[in-house]
Length: 414
Image (tube, rainbow, N blue to C red):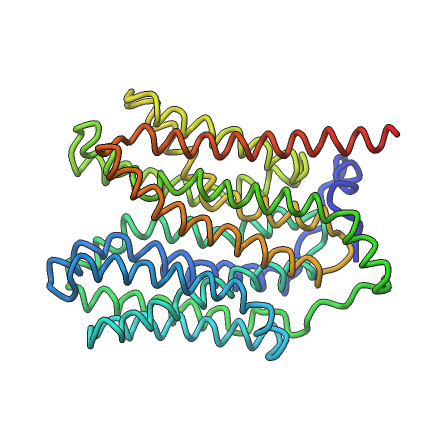
């Protein structure tokens, strides 16, 4: 494989990297379709559907929350099962089947036969999402030149931002046709995206690295600490993002007394910012390296959470909303790129590490959702404390990164 990205930055400072081939572009588009269907739509489109599900008497309020949690549980399972699925079926077939499963779940949810029926399909959509998140980039990026991986990674995870934006625009438009029609509409869109991606996935798995197993073991021993720091950072990043995912609209509408319309407009702003996130962070990483870009992302997210905790100024709230919107999907290519920097010589080791990182993020995202809800209720709906907790988690993640960097520099000096 090519040299790590951090060694290639200087060599590409004069000449622009070679353009992507047609096959690389098609694979990139397939990856975007995968993240849009399995994460962007399957997860984020559910949020604006919660009130209609309750008001249409499909399910009680308690059941609706439980059904939302089913997707998180499925996502955790998918993060763990992605690698075994690819090992047994091959990357291409596994990704095709997972896209079909996510699509089928949309159509199945158009028919509320029972809570169990709905739970199973929401769980399956989450499982497809977690598995695709583990497989999509690690299937495509080994076939992409190193100097273009930041850009391609950003394009792949652009689907997350598009899904967030669709949750505030497309879903409300579909709901005017009816609740069942909304699920079917999402299913049709997912079916189209599945068809578009069908032949885009790389036909062959990435070539194995030329190094021996002993070399891999030795490299893993040297980099294990850096990987553990990254897993902790990524988990803390989930704790930093969940407050905005859960409470931003309610904070603006009720906490600041701006009303539901301004709250909804704030969510649209969050979604528009999310569209730009993966591309912006990928672009930055190609130029300054993934380590520096991720460090900057942690700092900016901490600032945004601190603003929401301390200020009700509408301009500052808008600024914080844009920052958090950018980094909600934007941190994904940064974390994956850090793994590729730490483990530059083995796509197998990269996929294993990315699976663990995704699992850590999913676990703490779920724990954060329930933990913040408990704290919110038991502090008399104190929004500031929740956003402050998110800021503290991000600051701790940044400090861990800085201390690890200092430790590495000391080792080099000795």
